[in-house]
Length: 610
Image (tube, rainbow, N blue to C red; front, side):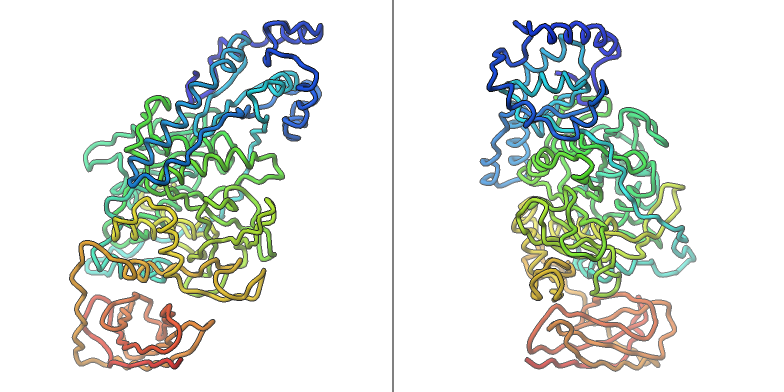
């Protein structure tokens, strides 16, 4: 089997030209003999050839052109047994072994046929398929084989990535309070940190444009950095094997050829230990796989990264060296593969489902197609196995105008999507221009790592949920702040605008059983001061919401306390809306304090009726 890093050698590429001429001549004479890839040459089998070959392949091999296409084998691995296995290690080993063994026992004849003719190819096992570069004649010969299910394209997809704007580094003045980004605060992540859970023992994988691993907010959290030296083996893979506008091909160390990958990784786990707390789960570690070159991806690049995450292997190595014990727990996927451009829906779906079977939570952006209904159409966003994220206007429970909406009609399922929503506008994170540079961007790409980080917090707080995909999704969904909508279907929750609603990781963690049970944060003792607080309650989409107003505070930021716990740190602009996540009759006590101090306001009680 060839290496998964690239096509076969240049010597074989040169040999291909002469061998192909011979093969074509033989085909013209109809004298396939032992060279017939099907070994049968029956007329009924030839009539199915056209239905096996995707239109994209037919178009891109017209007039003697060559193209890259997937030859997907009919015999695929059955992963049904993984669901009953209790741990990630058991799930991962089972899934990898089933898929690897299936590829080893079924691809041999086809690989031999390709090798004898010097045809460029790359073998995959996460989906039992081989990427081939060839002509129409080669595609047709392969499609006649009884062991081939279909021949699908490998188009180059230019992802439309959010256009960032520069942002200043957080304050570094002595004694200045650390800056926690508004989206992080709005999900209540800091309250989970206060309980002692910040993503520890969880690994997040970035499938993106790469990562600037030396960035001050990212380097301390890279699994390949021990504080003294770097080891990129099993922690980094580059699926871009040719070109590479900025990083070049096959970069031996993490490199970001755009701002995108560094930004999404930062939102999930970033923290420079000082004033730049940009990430949801700063106690988690990250690894990465570059699956886009300046936003240009292909199904092969996407699948190769999913294969790497299933069982990481050394830099310069190959999948036979894969180690499932080093697989990430969660992956961030802010990329798309539009079907109108030739993306292979079924093949990508198989790779996504393999990750889920292995206990890897694949968090996926809904896309930025705008405000029309049923425009959530690009893989992998609409798969049931993808945990799909819509974008909110940061700091509010309103949908961002660009966020794609369901229902899913492209596959005829009518499936509700997105699954959940998170802040996605004006989001500040790391960028690739320098080790202390930051950027601001908007998109479902920014909302997605909020959810990846939230899942890391959930799993660090409740280990019994770790790598249990369906119960973990249910935990976040059920604890979300439900947001009703009359658009795109049912007005209730969940719906095709917000999914289950705005993530509230504090509610998800405290609604379960965190272990170990941390010591609750004590209620701040007010000290005499000039801060005056007033509050009133209102219903927002049936959710009990408290409107707080204060005056007299002089600090830059304010801690908002509800029932003795700091639920948010917010700019000192005089007001804050607390969406409590509750409905019906309830009562809450509020107090606001200058951030990090006990200079607090009076206490106000807000009562809600049924």
